[in-house]
Image (tube, rainbow, N blue to C red; front, side, top):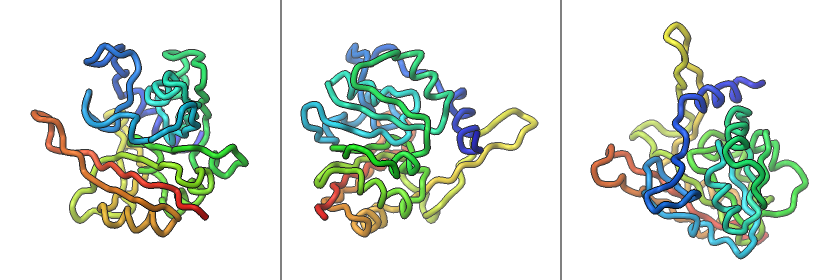
Length: 225
């Protein structure tokens, strides 16, 4: 197992499970932000009926399962076997859902049927070098296919490759994973350079009463060759 997989396994054990139902009484739902019942939903992906969609860093599968419940062909990839086992235990065999234990770039380098959209919610797009990820991702999207991802906005003055620390026991050093933090204008430039267009980058404010950390949401389309 790679150090990255160990880190995300550790992180998974520290995270609470997704609630059985949300505030609307739904058993599946899509959430882009770090806050419950906040922000837009799956409509950002603009998927056609029965569309094929890729979740980069699917974790325990909640968002992908929701898309499968809507009739989409949802494919999730994650490096953490603990996360994927949790997904299988909770959701079981869901029609239209595929989960793969692999890294994002390794999966995208395979010969695959194109996707209508791809997304990442605090997932692999945040934790993978965009100069390596975006070109191979662009190749796996249909022309005009949507890429949407969300992550925490960058801390002022701390841009580019940064370190995220995942705590362990009191007598153990934290585990470290790399993340890529950029200001909106830089994300727009990077996506354009790697074959995307119609780029929109915004920071969605936190809900009232929450910690005042919003959510960076990036939307783009794969340009025609």
